[in-house]
Image (cartoon, rainbow, N blue to C red; front, top):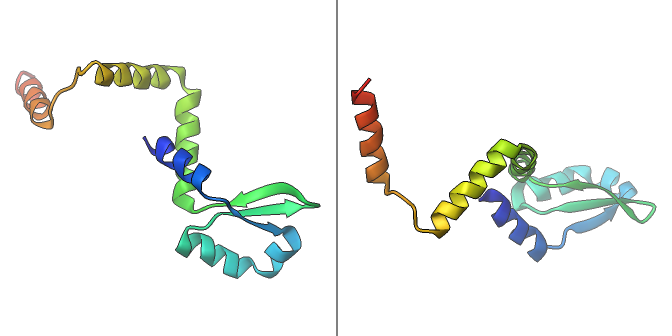
Length: 107
């Protein structure tokens, strides 16, 4: 689900674009903008995108999403879960807890 939230967020926000020279000069300030205000900074070299600075939790979420998408077994499980959800094949938290308690008791 995180990836959906971030996908929407990235399309709504335009990152602040700075040339590498300005990035070097204002690194501390730009880092604070990213860490504290959750800004995104696109660094350019010779007018072309070279790197992006994003808050660490967004980077970690992107890494996690990439890992899930590269694992065919996990991706298939996610797709199965989404199909089950769309078909209304769900359980309540109370039902899940009861089922888990029954399984533990039968061991």
